[in-house]
Length: 89
Image 1 (spheres, helix red, strand yellow):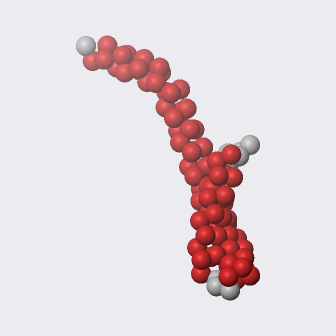
Image 2 (tube, one colour):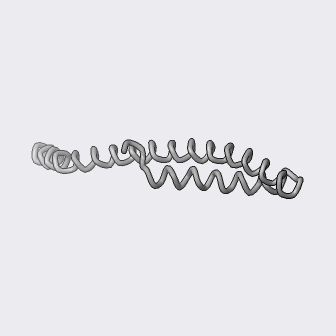
Image 3 (cartoon, helix red, strand yellow):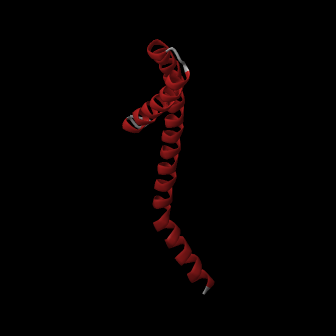
């Protein structure tokens, strides 16, 4: 019975191995995409805080509201840009 069990395990591994490899590849692509999204979100937030601060100062004379809005808008823009163009394309 042990040899039969080994054969069944070998068959199961042969059938499941391609699926496991595909899962690993998909997980690697998702990790790369999330990493790229974080980088672009951070870059967008940094750019947004400076543009928002300058705009806020020019419009109202205060930096704070423009900075806060700029961080959110810039971070969201960077995140959406990464989502539109996935890594590796």
